[in-house]
Image 1 (tube, rainbow, N blue to C red):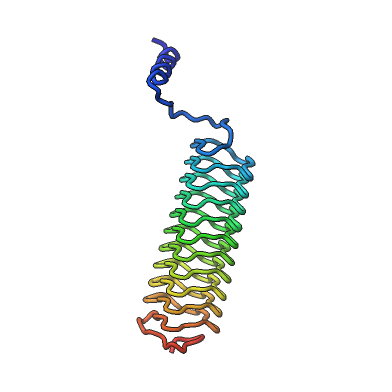
Image 2 (image 1 turned 180 degrees about the vertical axis):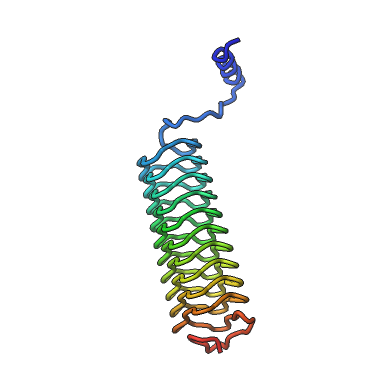
Length: 251
């Protein structure tokens, strides 16, 4: 029996049983639940499209434009998204594990509850993003701009954040355990109860940041800047608790 005949008989059989084949086509129209796994859709325009629950696993989407798209629960795991745009997109609870998205733009994107663990995002732009409770565990985030972003309870454990910018961002209860934060900028950030234990904060700028009850146990603080920073009840690198009146230096 030829392969083509076998495939035809197989499809006829499963259709007879009422089973929908799990095959997908890279030419399928943009719609909720579309399966574009492994497809090459570089440079495509998906602005304002509803792609809720869609699958892009291992797809190539370099330079694609998802601005203002609906991407709730979308699966981008292992996709290539270099220079892609997600500005204004709504993608809560999306899965972006181990994506390669250097230079991608997530300006004012809603990402709350999404997973970006082990993502490669150097030079990406998250300014004004709403990313509460997002997981960035082990992600590569050097020179990423998070200015003005809401990142409460975000998890940056073991992430590489050299020269990342968090100016005016909200990071209450955020976790930076063991993260590399050399020369990062947290000026005027809200960081109440943030966890920075064992992190590398050499040359990091915390000017006027609110670090009330934050923790720096065993962190490397060499040449860190705390000018005007609120250090009320902050736990210092030597486990000392700063006085409630501490500003600019742990007293």
